[in-house]
Length: 404
Length: 141
Ligand SMILES: [Zn+2]
Image 1 (spheres, rainbow over the protein chains, first blue to last red):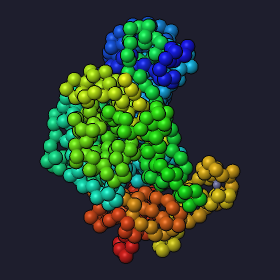
Image 2 (image 1 turned 180 degrees about the vertical axis):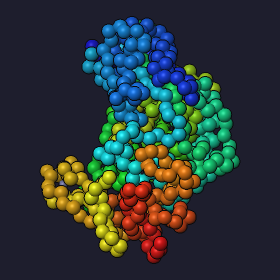
Image 3 (image 1 turned 180 degrees about the horizontal axis):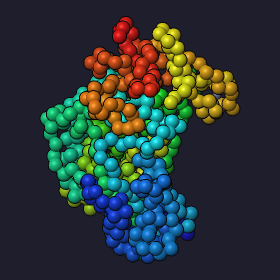
Image 4 (image 1 turned 90 degrees about the vertical axis):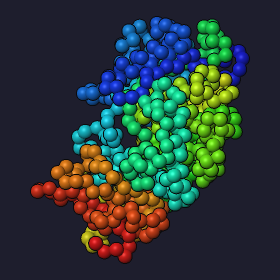
């Protein structure tokens, strides 16, 4: 029952397999992407679907169905075999929460081996709230009252960085240049072409100061991982598996004073001073604390580059550099392949686009491949410790730390 | 659509929030049920007008037509709309809003003073949907 089987750090689970359906605009059903990713992860784990004791799905909306579905949908498509099932919704953090739920089942002894799947077929253009008049929903309100799309928030953060830290649009473009160069090396990425700073500058402004190539696209895609106890891993011939050492799923602390999706206003700090760490910083800190490591121990990071400017913010929030020093870290080449701490070696959302329920799982897939040394041309040499970070709409934190 | 978020006319126009009688936390959009300060046992939430003027925290614009439920006339070409996040000093809160018509990102800088003014979000034959706009102080439409 004990997850450590008598040795190593308690609280760890093994990543036995990872799989994806390539990202793109394929125009097919999300179930197809999820099943393809699940089968790939099972093959990678050298397991049969019937060996799986539990399946956890990261939710998406099924067209025409009044609700969110995932776990049982994938289980049916793979063939009913009686596994325990759960589905989780946490917007962009859904995948990380699915991993966390799987981990909890394994560590508590409820399951030995769990399949985690996320997939989506995203609409073209801007994300938008579900239909109907729903003035009790902050996501609906920001569109109806302000026309505030997701890129509007990314534009606000970018402009704020320019005013406070002196970042420039040319700096932002270099994030895209870096991530596109790494995405070009990734067969699962949607965009596999290098991009120049001139091409970013020539693309249309979407939300000043951000241009089309500063902002991630929407995509179809799927990702899956097979997680198990370390004892199960050993029994099945995985002697030295990648291990998940921490999963951060924190909420913000009141008052949350950084204007954030989908809110129209921040909390007021008039009665209570803001916490020392912003929400995004607290996401990483919780993961570091649980893993017993710090940013100096990292070999690589996968972060949600919803916009180029937001990736720079993550450098600082993850503690890869001091506040306001994100651009310097980028300019010094530290976050590129071969640098001190490569960020988004997968190519990031810049190269994948968003398939919301799959993306946080895809980040874990990349960590697993990198830590196994299986990342091909985009391999981070000697990778031993990796972190993924993202933030889900409505206050869902998400970070995963994996080690080898 | 958003009853009780603003009131008044001309120089008397104000955003309306609520204030907790127990801990003095301010909420916008208004919170009428429970104080959200986790350290507060909860008090009466009374309506309060927010400061009329604040400083630009950041700004951007929408160069493409936002999707529904935003309402705009598809017959008309889309005019980029600026949005401003404004820090209100007394309330220590940041409130996002559209810029007044004619105000573009070229007219804005972080830290500049703006004031809240009444505006029109959308109108059709039967209804005019009113809203709030932020406008640099000293500018008269
Ligand atoms: Zn209170």
